[in-house]
Image (cartoon, rainbow, N blue to C red):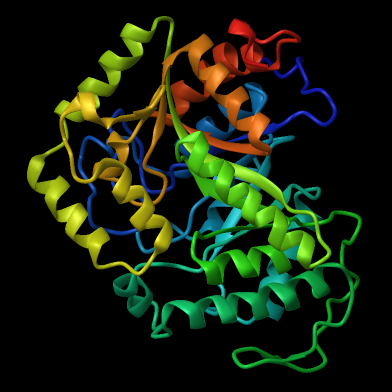
Length: 378
């Protein structure tokens, strides 16, 4: 979307993805070292290329860039800091793993970034759901214990970033005399958290500003949004909802589905099997929900699990494994349907991320933001 066409107040906002593990026309693993292919990482994720992606997203009307975290990613703080120097307005949704660094140190890093980048910062708290990856970081906590720790880290972070004392005598976090020196509190830092387990949802209800979901059929997502709203209300809070999903949009539906078929045809069967074995060993409820959407099926027809919702990307990619596939009008309609459920933020991506930032920004977002949406979807 052209930068001179702003979103209306109260309208959903759109973010883009920063492919810090490499980019290409084909999907592949992102946060882990497994599942990488030369086709998926043909474009090296150096500062020059990632700056191109960031500028394309900025010029196309996106609000922020998600910088992922994991063994297969470069450090998100460092790359976000580097790219921020070459952009003007776009923000950075920086992912981090709670518990791998002191929350006081995390607050200092966040405060420094927002100070020197003009406040262009939000934080994506990634608890982690792959025991193999967690052990590589030296973390041996069980699933629910990790969310206990996440809760404590977020509690301290929120206090410190708001300019208050962050002292806590918790089970996993113990801080005394924690405070920031002259914090840049004029720039609030919203906290985003994903997770589909009861433990994760309880933490979101208490601590998060935005609950992030991976793309599921609207009916399933509506159930989850309703449950989170109730949990947040019980904690005396109001939670916003964000959707992380890929987009394959073209002038016609036939062209979009042809691109999905091309991606599917290029997925190596052994790579698919190896990826699914890795997913099966995870203790992430969200990853299990993503895997259940495709069930290991590799025939194109069975991977459309709801109108224009394709589960093929999850065959080779961890995390967000679904894409909206269709004409520009159809994709805009599906986004409007999710917005009607209560989704107020979208984190989108496409392959390659450079060209697709322009395509989605120029063709899909204006249709979504039109006063009267195409096809009467809004």
